[in-house]
Length: 362
Image (cartoon, rainbow, N blue to C red):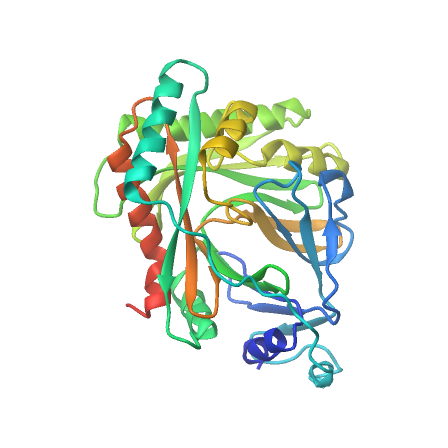
């Protein structure tokens, strides 16, 4: 019942979220009574001592705010947890503002041209890596059953953080991301370095992919050291399957000296070189002037917050749903030994994870 109520919540302009943590079974559904969103302007305004769902854009802390969805009503995937049952859905629909049309996607020719420009800049030694992204628009039938697509993600992406959320001014988003940004339980924290991509049928990692992964590992290790976190344990890298591609993943776990260290660690980690580049400031400036795609929440982070603890995941393998289209977001790490044609093909490969849910393909 919990999931079945979500289309009606959307119709009434009521913000909602749903998620399932990786390798777990519990599907959580939360609905906010009011359409008025709580805006979080920057990292310093984050409050972890509440209950709900945080959605932060890629440019969070760079002039773009995050949203916090309150858990006024909590449900599981099948039944209501709240004693108020479904009476909250009897309220009148609010006036909503839905994004009308996705942006015009980048052509292959323009993508290759811009990536080659980035490769030239990298070879000059100005920056080590830049993550370049684009969007792909898939036309859908009127009345696309997004809830069915979300249920399929839940059924088929057991190892991913699977989610959907609706914010009246931002529309409906859903995804199945393989990348943890930061998990906090008391003083204990976990994060991962996820980088490098190859087809699931490939047998060995290229030098470019291995170097890309090593760069992210070094970055995260330095982020932990810079705020005074010791006793860091690591495991990996290992190859992990995410849809039809594999990534290299290294696991980090540590104990914070104090829970207050979680905020500066989160601020230091986002965005990692896996979604931005390195050095961060130079890569961010290049992304701003080279990308035509407004990333919005793509490669930002999102997840549940509960009384000081949280599970924040990088928003990869995601899409924004429109009335007759779905906008899929994909990207790749550009380094000095990158090939623009190969990078284009990699984005095609990555897009197939979400594309098959839009198309209803097996």
